[in-house]
Length: 535
Image (cartoon, rainbow, N blue to C red):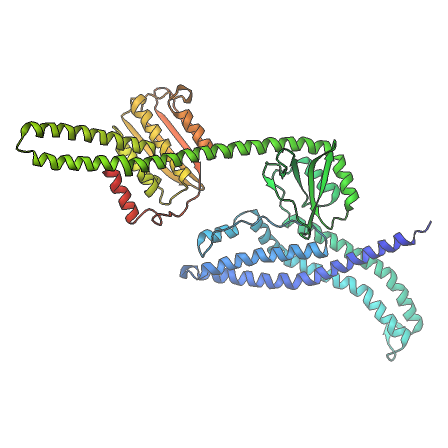
């Protein structure tokens, strides 16, 4: 049997690995040195100039340079060492020059790994370059001396006590063979060490990666491998969380292999196009994991259905809020304005009928009834959706709501930004429903309302000194608040021991947004809204 061909392939593979390791060591050193100097200089200068504001854009640029360095190192390692490191998860910071952008650039595990690579790569690169040079010299020096000795191009030359001649040159040429074997082994070990080092720093564990994905990634040698589960009813792929997945297109550097079981597609394995295992081994591994993948697919299908249910419930609540806003506008701009105009007409009629006491009395009674109806209509409009909430935001709307409560109420609002309409509406109705319950059932003498921001949550807290014993199952409206908070991924905590008052805390996820009406809550639009609320 001819074994020369496999041996030739093995030698060629070792030569490629050794050449790649040497090239990587020699290329990574200047790249790392240049980036260390740039980042160190930019960081120090940015911190020094930070009080003058000009340091802020320098720090942002330095942080982004660290990201770009990690990206280049990852591509270089993937190209030469075949490490197959997936891209680092990079956050999406806000635009512009701001502290929020700097926090966005440096936030997350991805940047910490990029910074760690920049910190530790320089000494590793120095050692790798030195080892590569020694390994190459171990072969190059004997070959060069052997060439000189065999050709006699130079004058008398000595290698130690031996004169360099044809016999010495032949001996050195033969010595270069074991030296080459040692060099290949050293460079192969260097390549493996580089791969482990780069993977340990730049590979972020996949969130929620299950044992099936880990098993396939380990057996196929592709740590960036991922699994997309096929949902035949909807004809789409989803990940473990039930989120739709777009399969890689040709030429993207990624490929996917279908996993079939029982005559139907179960999942797709997304892997590196240059996977060493080859399509046959991928198919074999997929077939072995088909049953486990089918079970995971059923779980992913359930999660996708739950996500659709949550999204549809949120859409229903948002549609209800929009209908409430529209009804409030119709009442304010239609019936309420007409009643206000009618009240003005009655005042004018009363002045003209001042000479007729009986007519004046009738007009006065009609005016009082009209004023009562107008108050009822305003209260109804506020209960549907207050104008001040739409125009000025959650803080002013809560203050206006607490002013109407018939008991002593302390209000603390630490909220300057505007938030999405669903977040503001949820926070407002938490306050109004809690205050309504206090006024009707709590027998309290005092209440305290606190609205603050904690990280990415709006926190609404309502406390009273009443009789306690509030129970969401008692039909007090708290059950509805729990359901409403669930639509925005919020949570409601109720602490109401009998005889010790009630404390309600709502946490509503939401980030600030810029007001599209008045740029943040002030100006003519806000003043008009406040005036409308007082009419």
